[in-house]
Amino acid sequence: MRYCFICIFLYGYFVSSGQENIPRDVLKSALYYERLAFEESDLSRKGFFLLQKSYIYKGIGDYQSALDILNRIKISSRDSLNGALKYEKILLNYLLGNYQRSFDELLKYRLSQGTSQEGVDNDILVLEILNLIGLNKWVEAKELALQNADHLSITSKQIQEVFSGKLKPKNPDKAYNLSLFLPGVGQMYSGHYLKGVLSGSIQVLLVGFSAYSLHQGYFFTGGMTGVALFYTFYLGGARNARELAMARNKEQARKMSSQLMKGIK
Amino acid sequence: MTISKRSFLIHISLLGSLWSFGQGFSDNDYQFLLHLESISAYDEGVFWLEQKELVLGRTDTTAFHLGMFEYFRKNRASSIRFFEDVNRSNLNFWNTSRFYSGLQYAYLGDYGKANQVLMQTDSLSELHAELRKLSLAGLSLLDHNFERFESFQTSFDPNYYQLVDHQQALLDTHHVMRDRKAKSPVIAGVLSAIIPGGGKFYLGKIGQGTMSLMTSTIFALQAYEGYRKDGPKSASFIVFGSIFSVFYVANIWGSVVAVKVENVNFNKTNHDAILLHMHIPIRLLCK
Image (cartoon, each protein chain N blue to C red):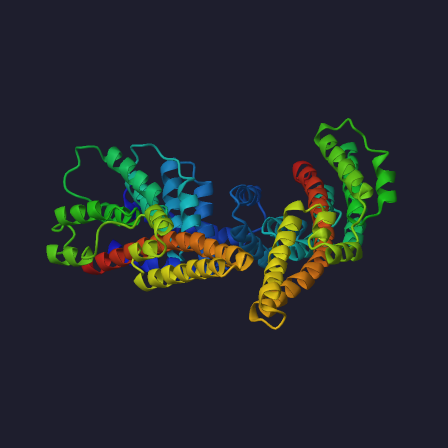
């Protein structure tokens, strides 16, 4: 069931970003829980009410507010609420795109569970795989998914399909340097062959124009228009290659996460 | 505690809260209100107060705190409207709302109204009287009324550590504004017509001026090259000559605009500084 919620919240994140007006029913419910927490002296129950309030904000896609509320909860390390609290922090950080933070919270959760726990917590496992995908650690994500295919109710074949593409993320710096070395190659490395050919061709033409102008004695035209334009396209092309590599990694991670969640459902 | 017990507790407590909505403003309510402010739950605070007003009608307390919540939410006009409903029966609410209204009118650029609201403050302590003087001096500066500022500034009391830095900051800003010689758009345009980039040099923007000069020179040299080698009817002369002409005219126009932008930016920078030094002490001393 929680997998469904993750999908719903992922959708909610995209449709509700920039939302300003909070529905009145939401405010009313949130206020009730805030009041209950305010009047409660027992830390555990106070934490429970704040957790309920956090669910309300999570429900409308306001993950930052939900996380801020959770950060106000102060309970002892032995409180039974700890598991739910840590899970929510992992989930909310993931939904906010703070993959490293979410992963760190996940490690803290694992540490707090200790080695005595038997079995595998599927919700945490799914979030760990999703975070690894978000962090561009796709090989580790695939291995973890394959190792726990039975727990996740997903077949190895489905996992292979999810991770069917190349599992090595594109390195944005490498794309930048490749385009500096040979214009257009960085774009090709990032998976955009047509853009690579176009960028390379423009720069070859500009070099040709500069050389031809200089050869014909048009020193100012060749030196200033030709070389200056080439230089602009040369650096701009390299920056474009870096951005394309980053965008490709992001898109691939999004696809993998989406397919994985469909498979698990 | 099991979840079922917890849920029972929640329902009982929720009923209690529902009941409390229908009642008056208790001490506990007021503490809760302050709590909402302390956790920056402004949306919830406004909603809660609106619910209270449905039962109690508008009171000084609801109007004042609605004004404060709207101020925190940066809804200045709405905040001012709520503050207007605060009356003198509670002097603390009255004076605080006047200071915040004055500040927000200043942010909205209505200095006359800000001045009028600040003058409504009443029975102030010595410290708050000094704060009002500082605020009025700030308003005079915002209004470029240097004479009025100087009349306030001469009576600044330097013995309040909460205010002394802000008094000095206003004095510094006053000197900067008073001593500045405004740049002329006409001179900038003429200088740019004589030497491309001259207007930018006049404005003190050496980098931009050099860039304009270089760009114009580059196109002029290319146009000259086309003219020298292929004559006045050649494509290269026509293309580069046209580009140079466009750059030359645009550069003159750009210099004129740059002076106007520079004047606006100068005022904005100083206005922001003045508003900041009015704002900080009000936040510090009006609670």
